[in-house]
Length: 65
Image (cartoon, rainbow, N blue to C red):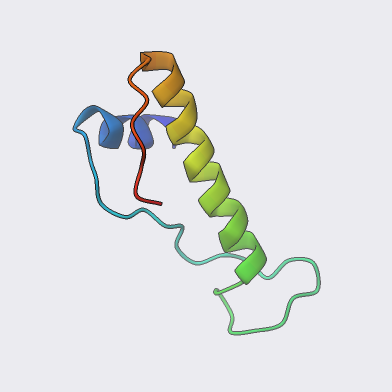
C-alpha cells in the first residue's frame, strides 16, 4: 500500500482518495461491506501514509482527503 500511495505522491496526484468497502467492526450494523468505522480507519491509514511520504521527501503537500 505504501508503494501505491507513494506512486500517487510522486506524480503529484491531487484528486480524492478514499478507502473502498470496509468490514463491519465493533458490533456495527449497516449495509454489508460499508462499515463506517472500518472505512474511517482506512481513510486515516491512507492519510498517515501520505503524511509519512510527505515528511520523507520534505515537500509538505496537502492531499485532497
